[in-house]
Image (tube, rainbow, N blue to C red; front, side):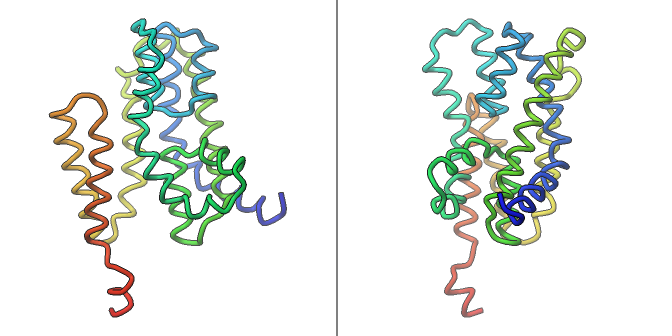
Length: 235
């Protein structure tokens, strides 16, 4: 890794640190929940190391705790929850496609909502940096692992983490990331459309479909309102 790559990696880590304040309580909560539903400490920590997908882990652990033995259904549920990653991956694909397949796979594995937000913000301001994304991914991955481990160790002292409001840490983090980016009519309209669709779908549909529908609504509204390159050139 050359000097430029090391600087990019370090910048990615530093940019991610503020977000980790909201991620770590969520990881602690998962460590406690894993034990609560009957997973062993090793199984709980391994799930964070091998899956690295917060919401999907919570639901998968709950399904395992209920005695569900059909792993295909658990995998399918995880796929549905994480369908939004297709949209996130599509926006980074033009940059990742130039890299070797092994590096694409490594960066794709570490792409979660938080690291995607950090990476896409870096792309908008300074262009894409592979080392910056790797730094963001590494910081989030280690934080998720360590906070899960802390949750496992604290499990016997906090039997019901949701009663402490730890599950609100993640939405609060996303709101803190979102609000500074609402700096135009288009971004406000996209946010409002996604919020309305998400609330309506959450109240009327089972499961996590509100995530997918809100993402689709935001994409459609953003595509309709975003001016085309031709109009921008004439402006």
